[in-house]
Length: 320
Image 1 (tube, rainbow, N blue to C red):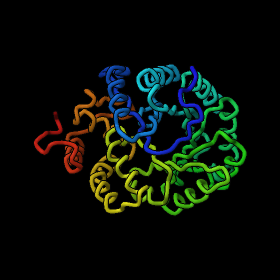
Image 2: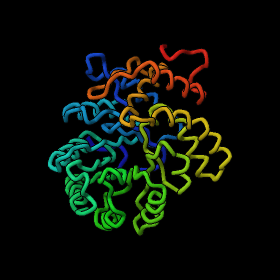
Image 3: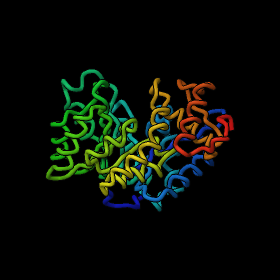
Image 4: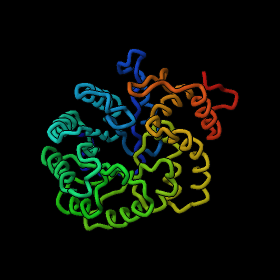
């Protein structure tokens, strides 16, 4: 299947779709399709990402990932570019996933770093660069490199990103999760100002407003599964220089960011699923192990955040 959006350049507001499950933890295809339709109907989004952290990709085998991409293409692939995550620790496996994603009609690939290189990548950054080179050699789809936090040991040094920009034409963007405001700004200036510009897509969803005012070309975020309309409003206000409007939107986003990205951080998408249940958008917040269902106090905090953001009527209870 050929990609419907040839020459796609990742930019703008890109939600990362959540993946609903039944109680037996099988994929709830009907609810996933409805979730995709809901996202696709949001004015101003520019693409949808699947097979990423938000869809619990670490718990999905290769066959499930192909099936999820197929569902995504069937539901929204004729309306929006679909970005497929490439999540694998082995480069050989990542290459296979990349080829399957291209065959499945994806318009771009989100390349995750391999955890094999954690806590040492800075000493031998060419290992991470080779992972990208092998994927680029196997597919001609645009690549988005997932820039992990400095603390993870999987951050691409900026000189490595610039070298890949020179060497690998299919590298078109990074999803920036570096976690450092100063580095985030340096990347925007250096990459987007490069001879062949590389777009920076913020995924600093806990401080999205601040990350966008650096001039980032877009954002790619799992919380877009819940608040895509607010993210569009924020991005557009920042782009037109209307800081008063941007601050007003950010004041609505802040309660959700504080709820979704609280400790433990790994529960972020667990909380987003619970939020979608409260909003009546999916029927079940089931997550696959090692994640577990949230407790009553956590659910109450999420409901409070949704009410503060103006998304949930004040009279509605978290249990609904």
